[in-house]
Picture 1: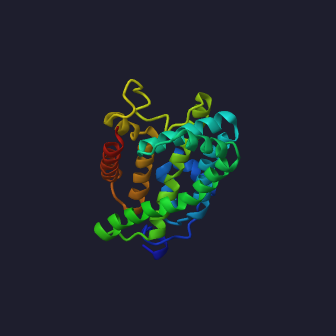
Picture 2 (picture 1 turned 180 degrees about the horizontal axis):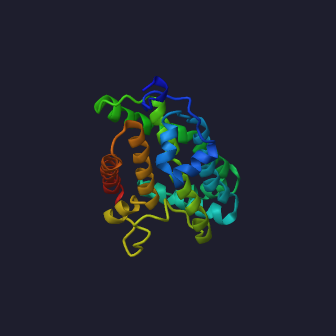
Picture 3 (picture 1 turned 90 degrees about the horizontal axis):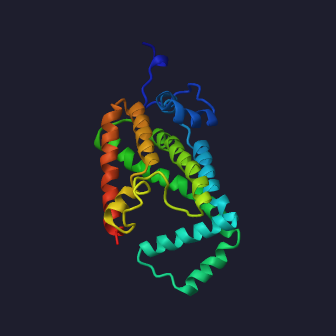
Length: 246
């Protein structure tokens, strides 16, 4: 076999890569085939910009309306109280005044687009250490980052799905497709409610897609990678639920 026909995922290829929007759609409709092309010719910047823009706009634009501002303010207060902070009337009034400007929406959009690359780099670093340094893989950091970045299309779909529902309800939450939302009779401050709130259908989808991408890159079984990712995420969810439960 000639060198030109070798498809070692550790060596970037100049093979044709679908366009940005084609890749985004492919991650949803045909992740295995899409990742097979992404790992041969890894691109990161475009998909990160697209995902960050979509999530930022979906979360920020509703805050330009009265209903959206009120919902965002309520969510912010709830998050502060969950971490033990006391929101006095004076603090609430100051937060309400700031929410009436467009600063909140702009901050959300810009913050998401700036924060997304940092989050992707952190996830990439963890996966690269596990699969390369510990398990002996040979993929480059850029290839792993390309897989992680493209997998972020799924959380973006989740935000697009949740945004109109939350706007219609006038209440913003951390998700509308988690198991806690399906069991409203649970005490919101209980350990079980906190844990089930971390079990989001779009998060499950994201983990599966991420496993498909890593399997394409490292030539491993999707099932074994997905199992490891689910176990790791489950541990994180348990820890967060334990420390945030009332």
